[in-house]
Image (cartoon, rainbow, N blue to C red; front, side):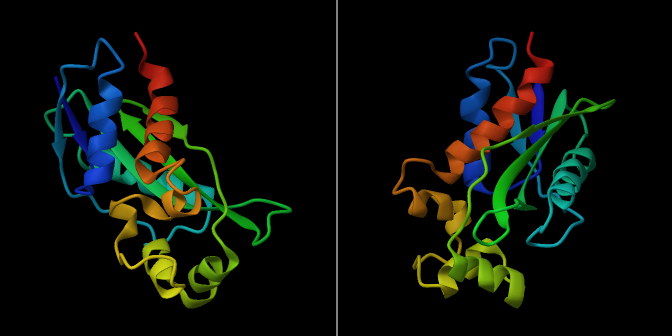
Length: 173
């Protein structure tokens, strides 16, 4: 069985490979990483936009496979949060007929990061770097800003796996 993932981000690929080992019917699947455009902004600013991005990625790479996986992290409006937004990861698994969606836990980035994202149009990598929270301009391909903010207690990979695990509920055998 082959499962395509619409990303070349090693953290997303490793997350999928690790998650599949937890599912007997998927544990032997071959994971193939393909570049996939999200069709949404580099930094989605709504849950709807993040869902669209994940769906677009999954649908565009559904070729010669059992399932395709699209991942999109983005902001969603959260009343009473400090900035009005939290970051969430969306996973869309496509079986050729329907999409199976899952979300990660949500978390709020520091205000100085949110300011760069909301006012300056930066994505989270750029904003975290500009705010001086990391020396890595591609922190999302490593521990992620969530990993920095939680001191490694919740990493980008963990957060991505949460979204995958909740999407897999719909195809559990």
